[in-house]
Structure formats: C-alpha cells, structure tokens
Amino acid sequence: MKKPWVEDWGFAFDPFEHLEASQDANLHRYLVGHRDWSAVFDRQPHLVFSPPGGGKTALRLYLYRTCWTGGQGQRPFALHYSLPDCWENSALSFLSTLSAPELLHRHLAQIVRAGARSLFFGLAYFPLLFLNRCSPSWRALLAAFIIRAAPETRWYLEVIRETRNPNTAAVQAGNAYMLNHQPDFALLEVFLREWEKALPKSDSLAPLDSPLEALKQELFLIQEVLGFPGVFLLLDGIDGMLEYTEAHALKILSPLIEQADIWAERGIFLKAFLPKELLDMRDAALQEVSRRYPPVFISWQPNDLVELIRARIRVATGGTFDSFASVSAPPLCYEDVEHTLISHLPQARLLPREALTLVRELLDCYTRRMLQEFHPLKRLEPEDLDLAVRCYREGECLSINPAVQSGRGGWK
Image (cartoon, rainbow, N blue to C red; front, side, top):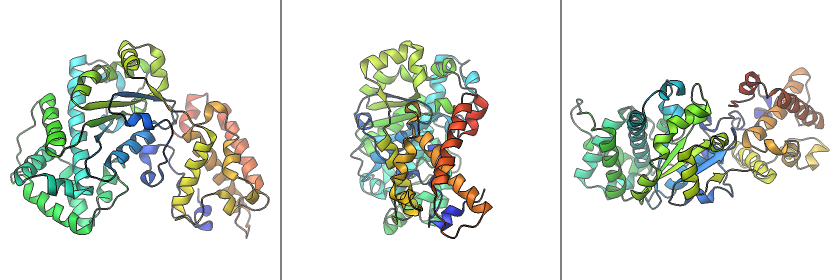
C-alpha cells in the first residue's frame, strides 16, 4: 500500500514500518530509555524478562550503544549474541538433541565470532582505541584474530573503504552493530591504512584454537590490550528461533545460564533477554540465577509508549514536530493524539509492539481514506482514529489464533 502521509506530512521515512526492533535500521536514532533499564547496567549477570513485543531487543540494542557512548572503553565491552542471527538455519528441536558439552562448544564458537564482529565495528567507529592503545605488534595480533574469527569482516572493510562510513557496513551485519556516531574522517582514513598494515599477508590463515581457548584470547584482547573493564554478553532472540518451544529453549540456554557465576568472576556478565514464560517453567538453573541476581521485568506505562511514538515522529520529521496533533484537523488537533491512542490499549497490551501496531492502523486508515477520495487538507480526521481503534480491537480479538498473531507483526 502507498503511504501518502510520508510525503503529505514531510516524513523522511516511515518510522513505524518495523514492528521487530532488530529489523529497523533507524532504531539507533530514536531509542528511548526506560526506568527499568538502569539496573541492567550493573556489572553482574541479569535475566531480563518481558512478553513478546515488550522491548527485549530494543533494550539489548540500547545497552550495546550505551556501552559504546564516548568510545573511550570506560564502559564494559558489549558483545551481541542474537541467537536467530547466529543460528539462522538451525531449529531448536535439532539443537535440543545435542549434549550439554556439545551445546556449550557451539555456543562458544558463535560467541567468539560475534565478539570479533563487535570488536571490528567498535574499532571502526572509534579508531583511537586501535591507534592509541595498540602497539604495532598488538595491532597485528588483534587484526589476525578478528579476520580468523569473523572472515566476513574483510568484506565489511571493503564497504567502509568505499563509503567512508561504518554504518553502511554495519547495516549489512543486521543493524545491531550500528552506532549513532560518525568517526572523524581523517581518523577513519588512518585507521583503514593501519588496519591494512596489520592484517596478515597470507590468505591461508591457521584455524582458531578450540572455542574455549579462542574465547580466552578474545577476552585478553578486549580487557588487557584494549582496556575494557569487563564484557556484557547480550543474549537475545531465543523466542525468534525456528520451532520455538519453552522446553527446547531451556535445553539450549542451560549451558550458558550455568556459566553465569563462573563468567562473572572473569569479568563476563551475562545479560539474557528472555520471554517471561520461561521463568514459569521452574527450571533449576534459571531459578538459581534468579535467586542470586534479582531478575528484571520490563513493564511499560502509557507515558513511556507516548514518548516512544513521539521520538519516532521527531526523528523522521527532522524535528519539525513530534505529535500527530500537528497534522490533524480540528478538533483532533487540539487533543493529545498519542495519549488518546495509547488509552485504547488494554492494560495487558501496554507494549511497544502493540503501540506501533495501533499507530500503523491509524496511518492505514488515513491512507485508505485519501486514496478513495481527494482531501486537499491532508490531515488526520477523528474518523481515522475511531476506525483505527475498531480495526485494532478486531485484530486483538483474533490474535488468540497463532495464524493471526504472525500477521499482526511477529507475535511469537
């Protein structure tokens, strides 16, 4: 469907297009904080629970980007471990047949690769970490490790060299590595030149050691060479895996959960973003970690969701306005349109994905009306809002059907 409102109201893009946070290339531009999120920044393991669409992935991305704010290495090194990205062709039913040692072995191999990606992009965004903290010998060791652990970074390097912008390469890695930062052009040039010098000259590189040994080497580079005061291992996406069930999920997660205390002693702090129903399964490993480290439950209030909507409007319009009231006809223009919208969400549905779904209903209703009959004012009308609420409620009634849930924006 066409989106006439984008042009009619001066939006540079549709900030409500993606209901899944990991698919939104602009998310880093309008991530908003949350009062429940501050606890997750403590240097200790955390289990973070919310329903589907409740902000787990957004919090993971927010935490990652906050750790990189300033780029001086003063905060812990954030390492993405998004299971659907790392295991995109593997179903949970297959992985759950593996033994615990084999599962841990495979997890560690993927964590090492994801850590190498995080290292590469972090250094590209903040070249001084590489240029000032690494002697030529450490640069060579760092570059050799990254290219062996994540060979795809060689291609990302070419993209950055051509565009002179790390974002153009980071978006190819799935948006998660994008930072709201553009390095100084001259520093980036020096980084690209010095990185080339540091890369191994031979294309035939020896394979990495065992995943456990490779992880130890990666941690040495992060903590000792670059000086980061620890590592946040950001585990997310278990409920986005193929053939997801709670029982399979717990089997896959257990080898990692059981490492939480051991890793914490070494400065690796597991931050696991999990669907809330897993806590109800009374798994022994989850229960033990939850007892030692109080879990975090993400909850949303109406004002939180209003700010979420307004931040997207503000960014997409370049700050021209931040409320749909600015593009509404009387009497709607005199109302707090965002609060009115959110007031129609049931208490159990006060979630970011539901708020975005309702906004999309509103914009679709405007679009259909404009395509059916020309309206020179090009403004939201009260009838658009009323119809959007009715359409949303009809979808809400149907959403207990799993076949309908996926159509409403990725319910799992």
